[in-house]
Each structure stands twice: as C-alpha cells, then as structure tokens.
Image (tube, rainbow, N blue to C red):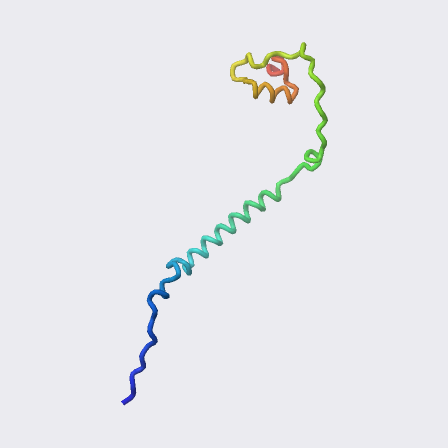
Length: 100
C-alpha cells in the first residue's frame, strides 16, 4: 500500500504577516488616480503663460511723497493702518484718488 502524501505544515503566524489589503487591486487604482491628478495639476501649472519681463524687471524705489499732499486715509471706515500703508505703496494717498 502506498503511503499518503502529507502536505507541508503551514505556519499560520507567517501567512498573515502582510496586511490584508496589501495586494488589493484597489490600491493600484487609487495610486493611478492620485498620479493622474498630480500630473494634471502640475501640467496645468507649467503651461500657464508667464510674463517673464514683469518677473525679471527691477523695481525702482517710489518717489518720496509730499506730506502736504497726503490725506489721512484711516479716517475712512474700513481702512486701517495696514490698508493705508498698502495704498500708499501703490501711490494712492488722496481721497480724490479713491473717489476716482
């Protein structure tokens, strides 16, 4: 009589050492979708037109402002010191300039 072949012993602890979802095809689908989204984002950024002359232009310092010709813009409701400073950097120092 032939001896029955015995199957090799299965080590249960080693068989579950990898996470269950490690080989799931969904992970590959998620990775592909993420890579596609990232590629679309960067390609849309790189293909935008850029004004290189404006980026490379050197900024000249603004001419000094005559203090007699400057209005106190903080007297207007909604304009604080930070906004008044930003407006003065853009050469808006008079109420008439804002009204225009």
